[in-house]
View 1 (cartoon, rainbow, N blue to C red):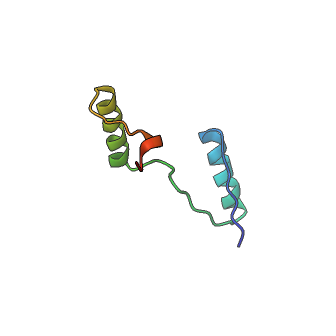
View 2 (view 1 turned 90 degrees about the vertical axis):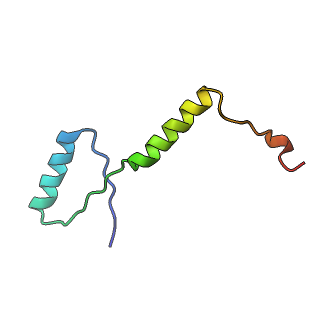
Length: 65
């Protein structure tokens, strides 16, 4: 079957689309685009560490030398 991806601009549009699909008896499923909170925390912690000078830099041009 064909998949249609819809990008509503706000919650009102999302609810209208859901109502339309229900009225037309079209089955649908929702997926949440949010990232895993643990992953987000890990990335933010890494950013803070880099700002605090705890990171190390790699010279990409001399990586294999």
